[in-house]
Length: 66
Image (cartoon, rainbow, N blue to C red; front, side, top):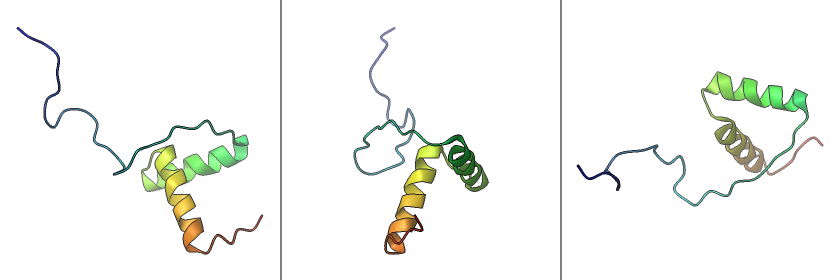
C-alpha cells in the first residue's frame, strides 16, 4: 500500500490568508498572564490574541497609553 502525499481537506486549517512570519517575543510574566487570560476568555490561541489586540490598537489610531 502506497503512503505519503497530501489528501484534500487533511491537516490543520490556515488561520490567515497570507504568509505567516514566526517571531520570538519576550514579555514580562504579568503581561503574559494577562494575554493568556484574554486568549482563554475569547477561546483564542496566543498568536491570534496578539494579532487581534494589535488590530484593535491600530483601529484606535495607534494611541496607546505608554
